[in-house]
Length: 186
Image (cartoon, rainbow, N blue to C red; front, side):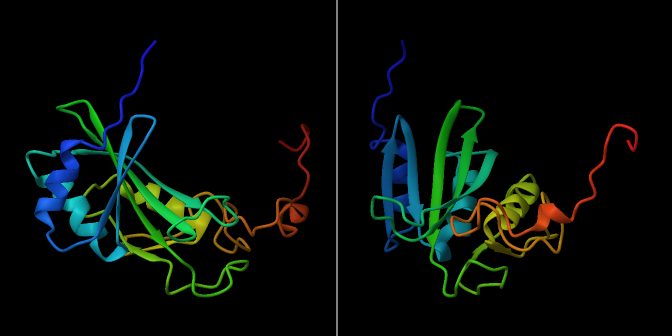
């Protein structure tokens, strides 16, 4: 049986803090995974540092994900989180970077919200392209300077962002417009 020990003393925290004096960060640990919460304006610089600094060397972007914390039972910094799961292939080490953003308009539709933007990591890790598109498609978070930000899992005219907590579980009728295809039609 493997046990996880808290990693709030993870050396990456100190490296980031030293590299960005005067910036506000929050360090967290959950089930042995260390994460740093950064302000949206600092996200791109911190991600670049974590990849390029030889002490960090997080050379692999494993995942970009979104979370909608609407009606979450514990207080959160903001409603939406965009997270980055980074790995160092030389040390076999993982580190998470999170940023939080709040919407400025009603999120039940598909209107573009100027507050739901973060900088793209595509220029840091090419593999971020499809993952950021998925976060955009499912949550409506847009990524500045993304080379091809468009829907990836739903069609362009899809009437919402399905992983937002205010999106109806049964959808908005988009499934009812499909022609039923049976075995003889396929």
